[in-house]
Length: 81
Image: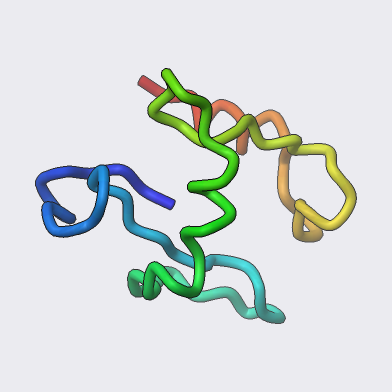
């Protein structure tokens, strides 16, 4: 998911939803935004009342990582300023 009010002004809160890795290799370099009905309800149900984010990703969670992914690099990229 991506929050960008300029790119997605018509989406609630500026959120757009994507799927990057739910298929076998080779992986796509780009992904199209998905319909809210496909992705958004879980995110809406889990957002905190004062937060503008949904949850923290557990990078070591079974099934989350693809073979060859580097947890440290994934986390650094996710938290880059």
